[in-house]
Image (cartoon, rainbow, N blue to C red; front, side, top):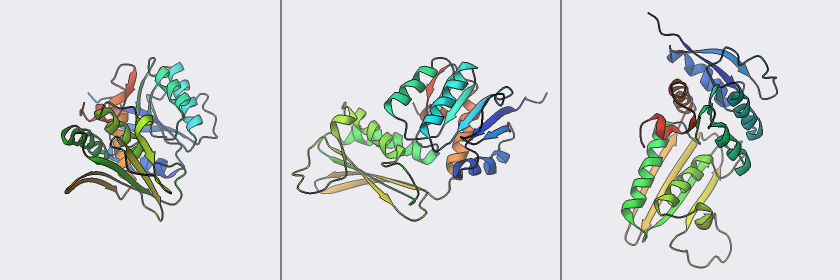
Amino acid sequence: MNTPKINILINGWTGKMGTALLACVEKHPGLEVVGKICHSDQVDGKLLDVDVVVDFVNDPGVSTSMAVTCAAIKKSIVIGTTGHTDEQRQIIEDMARITPIVMTSNFSIGANLLFWLSGVVTEKVGIGVDIEIVEMHHCLKKDAPSGTALTLAEIIAAARSKQLHDVVQFGRHGTTGPRSQDEIGIHSIRGGDVVGDHTVLFAAIGERIELTHKASSRNTFAEGALRAAEWVVKQKPGLYDMQDVLGLR
């Protein structure tokens, strides 16, 4: 007996990630694209036959509204849009009590291994090590720092039992004085067509550890998002990320 296909709708299909999703979905025989919309399109009626929405739009407000719509009709959603405000994220967390949601700043398997390793290394090196994050993206990226860099910082802060807003330092300028021991620096570089590079530096006296992930194609993010789409439709309501999808918890 043939297993029914999982029907997906791509929100933001004309964007770079939407294009990558359409290019990669053919490698996933269990998935079928039954709808694709732009952020300006009307959603009404297009979700009836959909099992899961894959959301990559340039407007986090539109992304949040899609999560609310999906929750209202009990449809799963995979959210790859970044730049949500605290209020918008809270709305999404509320919707996850009704329907399963996968939301992450980076869907690549390699980047999620970087998340995991960064937490492990932070715990092992202790507090006497300075930690800095450097990220580079293409010149057209709208938000800074990247969602991936913020996620890395959140993981590192949590591993040190700190709140990120208490220890984060976004770049430096002028007479800043000595670096505090708890500080987590984030530095953003923009230029060219870089898909996404992230490095976490652990700098101690006499030695340095560097963990780096470099993405050369958006297809790696698309493949991860499609993998998440296949996974999330089998889950109970809740807010998940790729660490859950990959079994890294």
